[in-house]
Image (cartoon, rainbow, N blue to C red; front, side, top):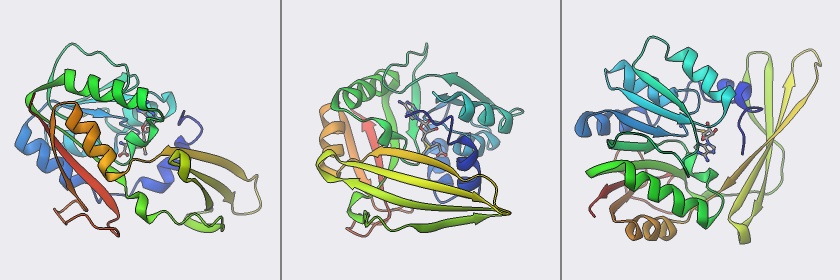
Length: 236
Ligand SMILES: C[S@@+](CC[C@H](N)C(=O)[O-])C[C@H]1O[C@@H](n2cnc3c(N)ncnc32)[C@H](O)[C@@H]1O
């Protein structure tokens, strides 16, 4: 999906989200740079790594997301690239490739997933690491109820979710209301979730030795873990 329409809302919702930053920073410290980030959004993670002196190549298809990312990393060693994770081609390999915060949930088909993992393997150095985090689908409770997602100054954001289990698809419908009765805006986030063993097979089949955790501090993965945190080393 194209995030252009969602870019303003995304900036409000996630400007203070930091849960994953130290996890990716530790990996960058141990693997070294440059780091390639797939679906780099507005540069939330890229900026954090770059402030520590790590060079980041930030791949992002949405022009509106990229513009915000470029603005927030202007004086930092971040190189922005317009592109999709299923068909990018860069003239170097990386010791670390990351896809933070559900970016892989925009690979909607098996063909997209196969193409993306082939591109990742191609761009990783031997022994390089591919790391990403995904929403734990066991937590989905899409009962259709409208809920308050957050208040951001004068803006209130409500959402309701639509779950299509047979398609492993989750639609999140946002309703954005400005104080003082301004126009209401609606956006839909379209995500295709991965199950645990689907990811394991995907990575194993592409020559990765993968490990799953249920949090950013090495917690075991359980049915109630908020995230699936995957670290996969390329072994063949
Ligand atoms: C949930 S955001 C995560 C952004 C960023 N990684 C972060 O942690 O804040 C997902 C991002 O993936 C991007 N995206 C969607 N489809 C993509 C694709 N096919 N290839 C690469 N990025 C994609 C979106 O434009 C969006 O910026």
